[in-house]
Length: 196
Image (cartoon, rainbow, N blue to C red):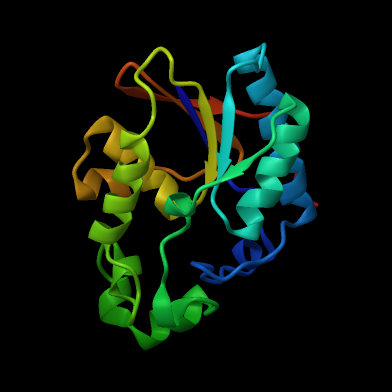
């Protein structure tokens, strides 16, 4: 079984700024979301013995994993294959600016992969598939992962065998976790976190 969480809200998220491989700290709301994910996972998992907690190397994911780990009494491991998609020259840019400057790219699906010097979908898919292939089979598989909107979509898509369009069309909430088990994905909402 895999539980997948996206990092809590960051300052860049609140500003609608592309993060990619750049980083931005969690907002107060994001910190509350991380704690809520920890509470929900504690309910879902029960005894954490035998479970692993694996995080992307980026600070926002590590901060979220640290909050989850504190609740589950698990120490996060880092795996670079779970890092967010690199948006190359668009990292750090406001979405509104990019939409004005690149109307053709933003007018179609999966515009994130049109970024100059950005990472390709195929590259993300390959590294995520490599990570998934190293996990033990179900039911021995007991892992919580903390990653990102983009890489999290690809993890779920690879697990479910979805094509690229269906993979990228998935939701990426910051107030829920997904249970991946027996070839299916189920969203588990966390306690509501009011905006500050």
